[in-house]
Image 1 (cartoon, rainbow, N blue to C red):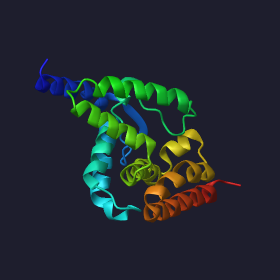
Image 2 (image 1 turned 180 degrees about the vertical axis):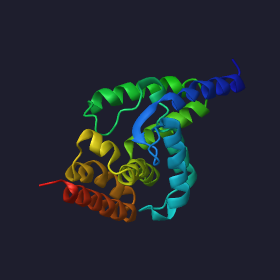
Image 3 (image 1 turned 90 degrees about the horizontal axis):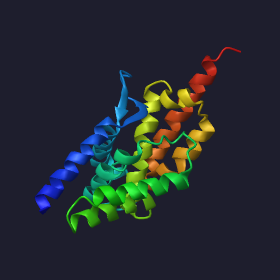
Length: 197
């Protein structure tokens, strides 16, 4: 199989990402978003919010990471942050999926994207820290703007939000975390004040 056929085969395979339904609703709450929509939206976040990264970033690399970071869900599905799933098991399944999917591409393209996916997962470089931060910002904002969204569905507390989102967002963008933390606190304060005593 020549390189072009390998690339087209990969593109056909990742079309399945459009069928992976996430827990997060669209902001109009008409339905849940899919993982392909999530990845596109994150790429837009990177394009528009790049000036808020904590370090110097290469926005093109960040966008690439965000476009490929959830491709593994073609094989393993989406695992919500609040699911309580074993992170070790999930890491193993996702690593196997990444090897299979990026292995469909010709070399050196497949290895380059696989390395970029691992960089995102490891979240050590400035690019990866910012990409990871955005991957937490988008669902946090979705929950705030939908009156609780998955937080309400899963009984998530403010303390859990601060723990699960805070460190990751702050590492990549303290400015974004400051806004997100304020919105989360306001959301939970409003929820507690509306609960009958």
